[in-house]
Amino acid sequence: MMNKNILAGLLLFSINTLAFAQERLQDDAAKYAAGITPADLKKHLVIIASDSLEGRDTGSPGQKKAAEYVSKYYKQYGLQPIATDADGSKSYLQKYKLYKRSWGEVYVKSHGKKYEFNKDFYLNGLLDVPEEISTDLVSVGYGIEDGSYSDYASINVKGQSVIIFDGEPKAPGGKYLLSGNSEKTKWSGPVSWQVKAKLAREKGAKYVFIITDKTGEDLDKEIRQRAVMARRFSAPTLKPVQENPLGTAAFVFSAKRAAEMLGTSVAELMKLKSEIDKSGKPVLENFANTVSLKVGRVSETIDTENVAAFMEGTDKKDEVLVISAHLDHIGISENGEINNGADDDGSGTVSLLELAEAFSKAKAEGKGPRRSILFLNVTGEEKGLFGSEYYAENPLLPLKNTIADLNIDMIGRVDEAHKNDPRYVYLIGSDKLSSKLHEISEEANKKYVNLKLDYTFNDPKDPNRFYYRSDHYNFAKTGVPVIFYFTGVHEDYHRPGDDVEKILFDKQSEIVKLVFHTAWELVNHDERIVVDSHKE
Image (cartoon, rainbow, N blue to C red; front, top):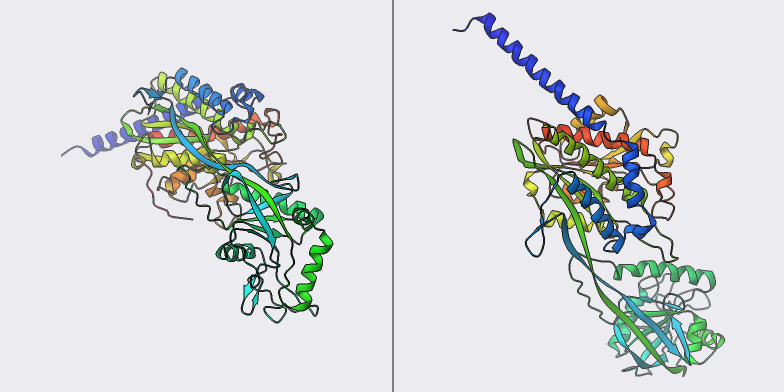
């Protein structure tokens, strides 16, 4: 049997050796983190957020220039390309497509005048009329058929188009004709146009025009709002768009424009409306005209790419840490102003370059990570988190081997809540899937950086729901633990004022160091962090 003193000595030696190794590891981490500097971050950001990249809109030449820029540095740092091109060669670019259907040429013509889409009128619903056609336009009152009341009883609209008043008849005493009281029916309200358009189509009408009650600034505001809402019909998708225009759309015009199209006056239109309200029954008036219209829908494919750069680990190389940020921004505004996106997410993009350089220096000096690291610049974030979604569905490395995703999105500015206290960072998601990840993050901050870690937006009750609004979420959905690093929204969010001159590089560099130390511990830890939490 071994002497107790010898056994105790060996145990003490082992503990001291382990402590020494741990101390050396921490010293190494501090050494390589020191290479993350405000000057280097700025050196990269003045390129990434320059006017020459024209706001890096998804799939644009500027976005592709940004992809080339970061790829060049990843290659310089000795990182490996692991995506596969069509010819079978390895590439830093994980290419994918977005599919888009958008409005083309849309107009209505009458009496030699051309009415412009989202200026003179707006469209409710989806319609596709690729070539200009002519159609007879007839007035059918409120366009209602309900019980004994029918605006279609004395007119055949088959093969024609109808123009109808918004809302429903209301007697002079204030009661609605159809309900018999002060309550509106399905023929009034925000979606009543659908009911009316469906009925008109059942009666054989080709197209539906609605005369809105709104005028002046109220109408202008409505048109602007509808134009924004209509963008959902132009939003890109990861899968080819399958549209099904059923013809239940409606052109919405003011009374003035409707009168012009019908060759009458607003006074005559209002007289007809008043007669229906007073009589409590349909009144047929021979307002009719032939109009021409076109509603174009255009198909578009957007070619874009994530940038993926791989650093192989040592004894635990099959496990991988992903560090991500989105490369693109929103491009050029309609008025021609460039949205450079220095903070969103130029700050995250250049942070990945600094992190990659720091880990590369460590590896070059024999201090490379035990686990592998994938530096992932995704695109399509502003369009709907598409790049990270594409990666999650087509991972370059198995998601089951992915230990965590550290995602950086907007860390270069301060928000209103911290204008007098810039040494902070919002952490989102750190405790939602892995308590160990949260613990490692807290310890890294305490040992090395000592920032204020603000968990305001980690609260599931927070109305901003930022946890669901950046690329980490597509990893979290698959069960991969995540941390989202963020410093909040500011007055230049998605505006031309988000420029390099406003970035606080000293502050940003401290946050990047926090990411580095957290990553260093994750990739060198003896045990892989486990998923032991399932918080919202």
